[in-house]
Amino acid sequence: MHTSNYWIAHFKVNATEKRVNWSLKPVITPKEIVTILPSLQAWQLGETSEGKHLIAASEKYACKIGDAKYVDAVKLFIKEEQKHGYNLGRYLDGIGQARIKQDWGDSLFRKVRYFNTNMELWTLAVIIVESTAQIFYQALKDATGCELLKDICTDILIDEAHHIIFQTERLAIIFDGKNNFSKGWRKIAYKYFFYATSSLVWFAHRKLFKAGGNTFTTYTRKMEYKYVKTLKRITGPQIMQLA
Image (tube, rainbow, N blue to C red):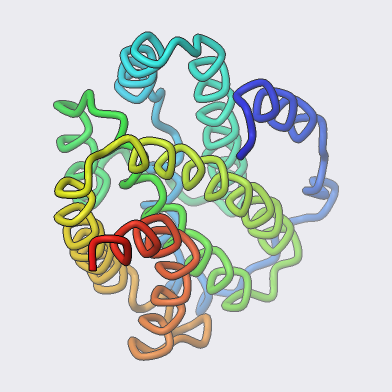
């Protein structure tokens, strides 16, 4: 389990990495634009959040556990997500396409998080979204022949792998602090929330997922693998102790 100081150092070093070759010109076909543009615009919007409510939740949580550095780590995590939004936005500008200001999926998520000051729910939601993001950006990378867009996707995928570890470690700490009864119902709640959210993401972006070589069955299998690597790894051993 890594400390907040470890993650602060990680995010600071990662911010110096320059993985996107901006000297490349965006080359994308009209057919690719039709296929990927709506999803690209929606995810670009989603990556641009200021993170005010997440910061507020992390401050409340950090005060409770006595780890002020955790807030600094969360702020750097948010900054890294904003980098993704900036890069995707710069790409949209480069191909002459608009940055949208509203998307139903993003609006729904923003409404939910607006009223959420609970670090457990925040962390759970981020783990799920980051897990779907890994499949999304790989599909986007596979659905285009544009080397610049592939670079952007690769950079995001590298970041997301660390983001999931960062959030999974935190949820494990939170979960471990619960009593056995609370752990029991959380195992069920986590699972249903994971798969319900995953299904929503598929139906919202199925055109892009399919263009990247996924079917609903393969997408579900990938999400099952990610569930096992994250939430089930957290909840499984504790639930076994109840038997």
